[in-house]
Image (cartoon, rainbow, N blue to C red; front, side):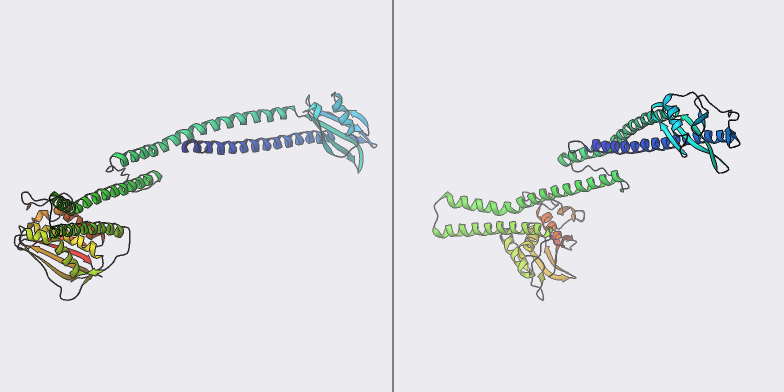
Length: 445
């Protein structure tokens, strides 16, 4: 049955089950009918024998035949024997006559004569405890056999019609029931290939079809989320690797453009090494975030060392814009419950944003709030508009404070918030009297 579709298999199963049930019903009906007809034939021939016995008279130990019953029919065979001598008997075929004579001295019993399709019944005639003779009655079984044949033929025709009707109805029902499933499957396959935003939206599941729709909607949601995650990861990876990679390429091209002194080559190599190290740390941080999303174990790191490392990575931008970048040490040692590289990759985009828009200084304060370590990053720049405090965390969105010619793809803050929420933290923009104020919340160790 494997080559058959599910609809054909179901229809075949229904056909086989109904055919088996009909065969059982037809067989049972005809067996019951045969038993009923056989019993009727026995009762009829017995009743004829009893009626004949009631009409007999006896005198001096001899039997005499009285008036024949009114219901004597043409096929009603009745013999009256006194010993082996027939006092009365109908005209019958030789096999029937021979069978009747055989029953004249026997016990009470039924005998069928197959060659003539006749049933005989022998009943002894006993008067005052003495057997005076035997009455043999017979009946033709032809009408009963004809009734059984007609009943069998009619039941077979009826069963065939019922089976045909059931198969047609089952085919129609199966096709009607499975048509929405086929349509939904094709739509889901098409949507998963071209447009993951469509959904069946059949409401709360209340039957198999709506449950299938809800399952497919969940599958499409997971596919869409996975695709969005892959796209976001690609965008974040390209954003994070673009700057250090550009520095490596620029410095290597500058070093190869002309002959330099050993000290100059050393300085170039050191710069290339720092940027290559930043590339490696960025990749490690993104991979660590992916592992955390998959449920991997988390490490711990010193909160102040994390902020210092992120500030060191942004020192070049701060020096370029002549900003004072200050990281305050907390009153007591604090530790975050994540790896240092990942924590730095969360804080660094926020610091870069502050250095990019700050006017004279950027300050980082570290504190404890419930079960989180909070980094407050403040600058004295133009600040963040009220209606942009959430939008600036969307990928590709940049605030209205953007300077002309400013480089960036608008992915830094989006990456920082996503990575923070991956480890049960967050990055938010808060109102400030002067400039901008960002809070980076990381789980405490």
